[in-house]
Image 1: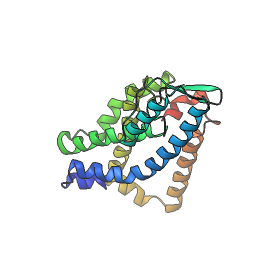
Image 2: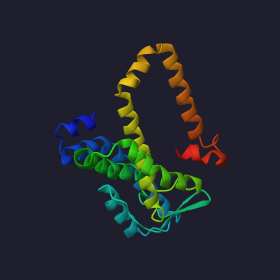
Image 3: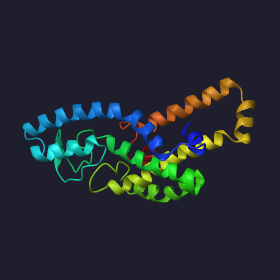
Image 4: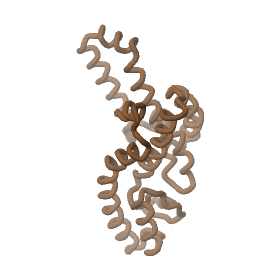
Length: 212
């Protein structure tokens, strides 16, 4: 895994090259499809982008950078303003994941702050974001800064869970559990994740869990 490689000498450029090589091909494919789609919407008058702005958006997004703007894209009856990756909407989370990956590398190499402390530090702003009903924030020019605690919390929670699986206590516990029981536990956990993630099932009353 990357943590082991970094701790054993992998350089920052090598680490980021591996991450980009893994994510970029599908990102580029989606970007080209998105360009075609948004260009067609622009032609139909369903966006406020000029052709020049659309070109700049493509160039910024092509090199994996956000394009800050206040233009609108109309989706059915709703206008969505200021997408920082207007040609590949979900890519905002990938961009901030890359930012968090840089922090992850620097922490492993220089600071050595335990993952659980980062999770606890990120939890407070993350919880505030969710409780204020901004669980979907981070994608736009007006809310991009909310992506940092949101992505940091999830990323380092995963790192923390990985570290827990390497502890003697966890390995001792799982070795005593029957495989069937462990399988049922995983199935229940997966079911809960699917339920809280499904937008038609999880209403505003469960916004905290949807955010997680």
